[in-house]
Amino acid sequence: MATENSRIERLHRELNALTEIAKTLTLPLELPELLDAVLKKIVGVIEPAELGVVMLWDQSAGLFRPVASVGYDLEILTNLGFRAGESITGKVYDDGIGRLLGSPAQVAEAMEDMRPSNRSILVRALGSQSMPSCALAVPISVGGKKYGVLVLETLHSPVIFSQSDLPFLQTLGDLIGLAIDRANLALQADAIREARQAERMRSEVLAILSHELRLPLTAIQGYTSALLLDEVEWDEEKRKEFLSLIDEESHNMQSMLKDILDSSLIDVEQLIIEPQPLRLQNLAREVASEVQLRTDLHNIIVDFPSDFPIVEADPRWIKQVFRNILDNAIKYSPEGGLIVVRGEVRTNDVVIIVADQGIGISPEDLIPLFEKYFRVKSAANLHISGTGLGLPIARAIVELHGGRIWAESKHGEGTTIYFSLPLLETVLDD
Image (cartoon, rainbow, N blue to C red; front, side, top):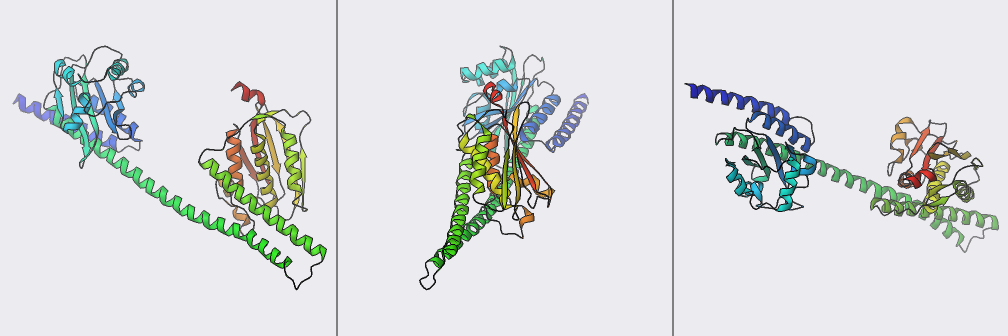
C-alpha cells in the first residue's frame, strides 16, 4: 500500500511538473531564454538534479553547443564544443536513447574521451575540480529530427537518479524538441515572408528606377533630335535653352546612377571613410556654389559662426551629404525660395542645419524619410525625379562618422534637415 501511495504521489508530482513546464514553453520568449526557463523548472522538479545543461547540435560548426544551463557559469560554458560522439552528450545523441549513469565510475567512463580543453572549460564553469557523480541524459528530437541532448547531473547530493526518472525526463526532452521545432518553423516562415517582401520591393524598385532613368533619357533624346533637325533653323537663344535642358537632364541621370552605386556600396558594407581635419563651412560653401549654378529659383545662403571648430571627417563623403540634402531641398521646393545652411556648436558635436521653404512633409512621412526608396507622399502630384536614395545614403555616411541625422517639417511650411558630427577632440579621444 505504501509503495502504491508513493507511486501515485510521484505521478501527481510529474503531472504537475509537466503542466508547469508546458506553460513555460508557451511563453513569448526567444529560444535561448525559453530553454533556460524550462531547464530551471526541470532541475527544480527532479529532486536529485543539481546541474543541468541543454546541448544543441550546431550544424555550421559541427559541434554541440550549450544554450541553457543551471549550476554552471553559462558565460564560460558557451566556449564548450563537443564533437560528434564526444562525452555523454555525443554518445546519447548518436544512440538516440536516454542514459542513466548511476555512479561516478560510469560518469567518468562516458566522459573519458572528452578533450582536455572541454574538460578545462567544464571545471571553470562549475568552479570546482569535482566531476558529476551521477547523470541522466536524453536526446532532444521530434519527428525523426535530432536537435541535441538534455543532461541532468548530481554533484554532492546523496540522492541519485533512478531508472524510473528516465521516461519522465525523455517526455520533457520531447517537449523541448517540439518547442525547438516550432521556433525553427517560425524562423522559416519569417524568412520566406522576408524573402517575398524583398522580392516584391526589388521588383518595385526596378520599376521605379527604370521609369526615373527613362525620363531624363527621353528628354535628352528629344532635345538632341530637335537640334539635329535639318529643316529647322534654331536661333542661338533656343539652342542654348535646349543645351541647358540637356545638361540638366544629364545631371539628373548622373545623380541617380551615383545614388544607386553609393547605395550598393552601403549594402555590401564597402563604403569606406578616410577622416581628416576638416572645415565644414568651406565644404558647405563649395557645395552650395555648385548647386546654386543649377537653379535660378532658389537662393542658397551659408551661415557659420567665425569660430566654428574643425571636425574629423571624410571630405568626399561629407560633400555627398551636403549635395544630397541640398538636392532634396531644391526638388521639394519647386516654387523656389530661400535655402539656408547653418552650423551650430554643441558640447560634444556640431550640428549642420539645412532649411528650405518647400512643400514640407506630413508627420507620418517623417519616420520613414531616411529609409531606402521612400518618396514623400505630398509630392505625389508633382513629377520630381529621383531614386529615393539620397537621404538614406546621407544617413549611412553620417552614422559611419559617429553622428546622426534627423528632420523637422510641417506640411506646406518647408523642411529642415539636421545632421551632427562629433567634435575633433571627441573623435580623437575614442
